Image (cartoon, rainbow, N blue to C red; front, side):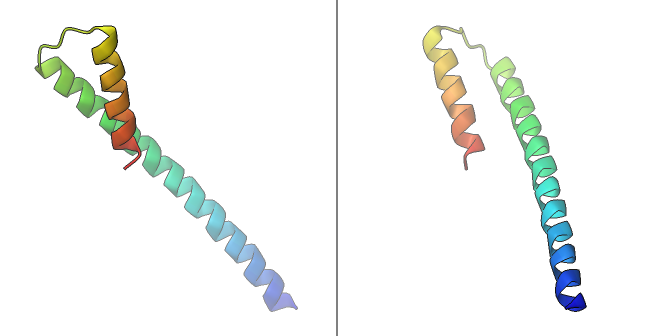
Length: 66
């Protein structure tokens, strides 16, 4: 019985730590992706219109979803 409780507690701590780690990694990846895309857009002369902004937003979302 004690081993079962210990296993459940340790598994819950592992699962929580893993979720926190995944959240931190996702936050870093999204921030790096935003910076990269911003540099790419600044490097190329792009005239923003509603079309280009929506296209840029869709491209950013598509890359994030990979």
